[in-house]
Length: 239
Figure 1 (cartoon, rainbow, N blue to C red):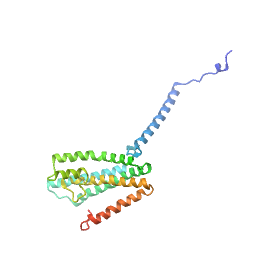
Figure 2: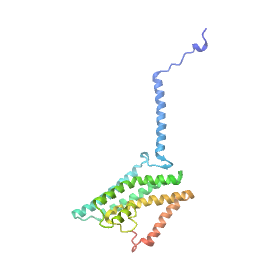
Figure 3: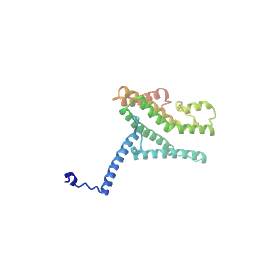
């Protein structure tokens, strides 16, 4: 006499149905892994990173426009000196607008990263990671180019003074800057902005996180303006 369990038919598992279920499960797992890896890619050690998914086409377009204006200005001015033809004021001013646009974009992008650090974890480790990433993006190529210039076109005098000032980004502290590598003044401004503004902002965030951003922004508007008017302006020329 057979038991009741023996007469119950076993479920038939069709191969194509099993394959569909496996694909669905694997697809969901891959999507979860991809989502998790994307989150890890954007935040490392509590510090936000710039991933390809976070890029904004409009900002990239503005960056391309700034690059075009600066390169066009420099090549035109150099060509004018070589082939002895006048360069119009509009061409010269295009380089100035390009540099100013670079500064605005840099402030926006770097400010976004710093705001994320303030919200997440404004400690010394986060600041150190931020600074190391900024320096690794700019300093290696800059130092290489300075070394190439020293080999191919060394300064006419004060070799050690030039090396010290350009390698510490203090060449812009005394104006007018030397013509040896004069265009580096923009990078000098950038590096000191990275260091000082991020340090002040995160130090304030550690003390009073709610008011850190407005206080830091106000300080970096008021203090440089007062110093420029007091010590730097010559006959009303703030440049």
